[in-house]
Image (cartoon, rainbow, N blue to C red; front, side, top):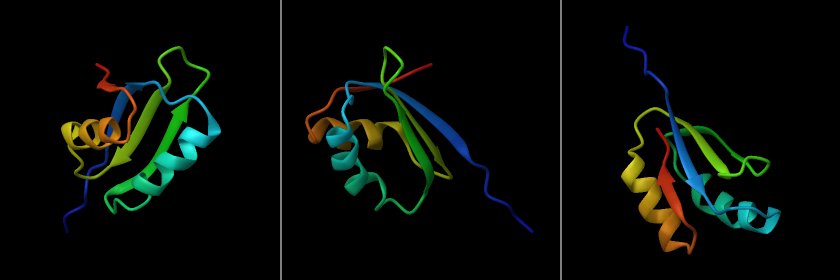
Length: 75
């Protein structure tokens, strides 16, 4: 029996408002490999946290940038 291992991806963004989060939801909720995602707007880096089985950080950053937001991977 093989189980999938979840990974946690962390990104620094400029996503701050509820309207921004709602707009992003339409993109993130369509990605089947994402189990959960949150944006910590209380954090100075507006951290986007994604729990996924096989999502690549570059894919997320590219799509979020195409939506007009800043996004870079946190270490």
